[in-house]
Structure formats: structure tokens, C-alpha cells
Image 1 (tube, one colour):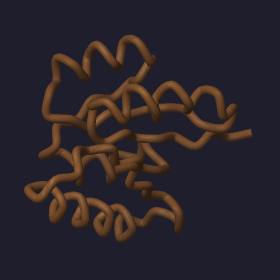
Image 2 (spheres, rainbow, N blue to C red):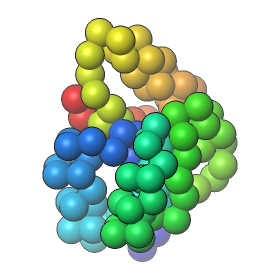
Image 3 (cartoon, rainbow, N blue to C red):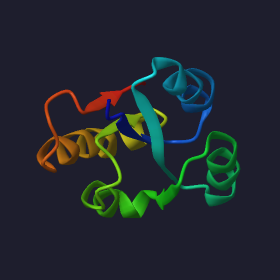
Length: 107
């Protein structure tokens, strides 16, 4: 069975404590990319979880078109400054040729 290749957007508490540890437990999913503003933390998480690709926030569209992800889990901090950006990320993901249900906003 082909596994769903996930990217996680954000490397904060929600992704580290809730999402990332649970992906492997599904049996049908794998983390293939992390997108964050803190590359040092992303590198540590990538090593720990075996994530092959690291992208900066400014590389979101590049990540979507790279062919390394099937689905995106957005776990970036939800506050007034990022709400608009997070909504744009969701819309871009849905318009990036991905199937329905490919974007999950966790916060």
C-alpha cells in the first residue's frame, strides 16, 4: 500500500506533541517534509523523525510543486498576524493540484 506523504507546516507544540508522533502510528502515512521559519529546530526534528525535506516558510509553493508531499498539515500558530497567511496557505494547497481533504489546519 502506498503511504500518504505528509508535510507539516510549523514546528511548534502542536506539530511536535500531537501530529508528528502520531503519523507513524497510522500505518498508512509518512512525514516527508517540514516547513518552518526555524531551520535549526527543523533539522533536529527532521533527524528525529526521519524527515527528508526541510523548507522555509517562503518556500511553501515550491514545496507543494516539488512532488514530495501528498498532503499538508498546517500547525502554525494561529494568531491575528498569521490567520490571513494560514488561510492563504490552505487555499493554495487546495489549488495546487491536490485531492480533496489534503489540507488539515490543526490550530
